[in-house]
Image (cartoon, rainbow, N blue to C red; front, top):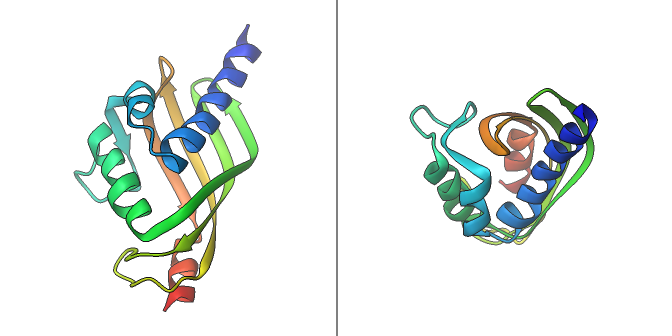
Length: 137
């Protein structure tokens, strides 16, 4: 039974990436992200479901198009899922203060998600974002 729950938790992460991040599925985001969500890598005070929605729509998709997240490794234990993934996209708009360049970006990420009742409740991440941003300047 425990192994089934771990596999289910891994699948929730991939589903979120494909449907909520890539396709901006607001209804699914409401289902999969708790209103008590804490993003440990966001600026202070930028927590909750609406803050996460804002990041996806107004930061990520405002500056990037053809967004794709590919997960190639996951480890699950209890309510935590660690995922190693690659985000690819086209820099087609203002992204974190950098005007569009038309360049394809590739960002490597390691994320830790804690789930509670099948919903995102906490998020931590490390990425090579600074290297990606430097390549756009």
